[in-house]
Each structure stands twice: as C-alpha cells, then as structure tokens.
Length: 150
Image: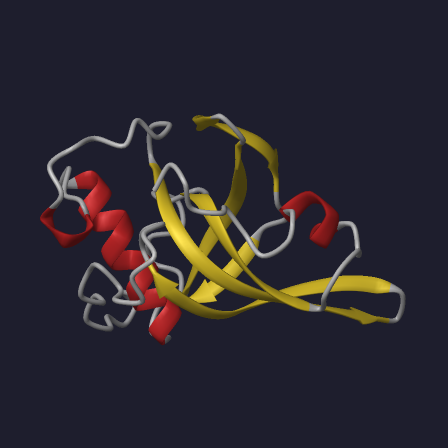
C-alpha cells in the first residue's frame, strides 16, 4: 500500500475542474450525519485525499456525495462502513492502517460534468474498499435494505 499511487489525478485539481472528466481515486471517506440520516434512501459521504507521506491525515474535503443505499456502490460502501465499526479489515487483514477515526479507505471512480456553469460530480463505480492493487472488492457488499418508513 505504501508504494501504491493514490489516484489517477490529484483530487483537489479534479474538483477544481482540471484534468480528465472521469478518474479513479484512492480516498478516505467519512459518512456524514450517519445517525440523523440512517432512515434515508441515500448515504451522504465526504471524500478526502490522504496527505502524501502522512496517509493518516486528510486533505481538503470534497463536496457531499449522495449515494443510493440500494445501489451496488451504496451496498459496497455500507459494507465498508459496517466493517469499520466492527473493527474488521478487507481480506481479513489484522494490521490497523492508522486511518483517522470513522473513515474508510475506498477506491472510487468519479465523473465530473458541468450543467449551466455548475460542476456536478457522480460516483460511477466503487471497485474496492481498500487501496491494494487487487481488483477484488475486499468485502462482500451489504444486502440491500429498504429505509424504515413511518
């Protein structure tokens, strides 16, 4: 992991509109308002690029991403968040990576578009919940659960 390139393009530049319209990133992710949104149909995530040489520290946060819980990406992210809470690691690894609390490592493909002069970002794919070179997801995606209705 220490020698793996973090991303195809720097996240800060990508978010600023530079570079390709779609790229894969190795990021830290944090669920936003997890308790307050637990019954919502979407997960709210903020992504952070790790700081070079200090993977336990984060850079500038991304805009909020809303991901449908019942989508393939949503199930994969839910599994990673649950594994973090249960203190489990992808592939059963035993070594703590030293990431900031309540953050998960994720590989994510993001697409940037511009509509009426406003940048929009969407998650295209979540290939894995780790930064290893392996294309295996590392965790089994969570079963789709419908949000509780009143």
